[in-house]
Length: 386
Ligand code: NZQ
Ligand code: ZN
Image (cartoon, rainbow, N blue to C red):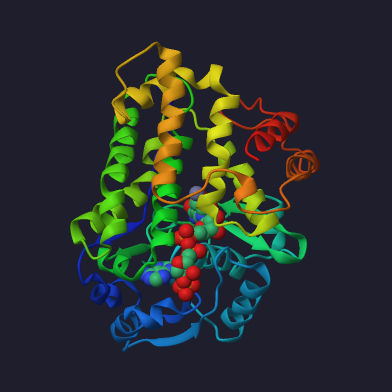
């Protein structure tokens, strides 16, 4: 096992009707900016629950943060934070609203010329404006981590940021919010969380036995609840396990002491930036070809994944490893998630070379757990996913 430090300061308040405890978590004299997305919270009752819980506070609202939070829109929220002297941010939404709020938390205290530099320069945020979240969509784990991803339509970029100053102070996780999520978004959430676990697991054996078992437990739980939650999103037992699995998949715990990959996300973000494909779907496009391309380096863990998660008993290590990739793809297909780029955009040809050029320009010359995947390798992997 590798050396590590672990600190996660986010308080999780989990369970039925927990939005009512919101007021206890925010300082009495706070001036709150409540941030939300395109309006789903106004149709499913979450907006009423949150505003009722905040009735004793001074609250300003900022709605309209789109999926893949857009930089230009966030700049408008930044103006509100400054002109209204906001002291606390409350994100009510999925990964996009929470990530947008993390960007604002950082940008509100940023002293540089242009807040885009927070993303472009990748300098960790050590201190941000305090914020909390009410999670409405299990998927990203953003509710209990310190990372964020922001998009910019003008340049077709999607870049990540983060730092120890960007953990939410608290996150309220009421699994009842899952009831109103459309099937397509439920499937996205399952595949995103599944791939988060894989990015921290599908590397090489490193003696992190507990980390492996926890990772496999999350994968098995996601596979078990997937058909149930798709069939009936009001199934509370399935919803609560879905929600907690997504949080546990990316709150830092399973990555401690083990090597991590994250190449699938790096390539996937480019597909969202170029074509607007949903985040989780970009991962389902890249993952199979990434594992086939890096088969030699990853076959030990692929075979372990096959044996322990999909109960593959027959064949050699190589055969089990290959079958495991197919099983993973079958799982994505079972959620009606397609795994070829050409199934999402007619403009797929040439994508691989665009992405490899971008990686070169940004000096991303070695990614993956061995930091040895070059832009040329990236080009091949993306091409294999056409
Ligand atoms: O905008 P509204 O109207 O609220 O609708 C949203 C949105 O259209 C809807 N929705 C959310 N909760 C709902 C609901 N609809 C009905 N009922 C509810 N309870 O779902 C749609 C998608 O929401 P979004 O927040 O975009 O989804 P998700 O949580 O998947 O977030 C995706 C973003 O997170 C980033 C992605 O790159 C993408 O930008 N990620 C963030 C990570 C992190 N911070 O750690 C890690 C991930 O790998 C990922 O990169
Ligand atoms: Zn993801």
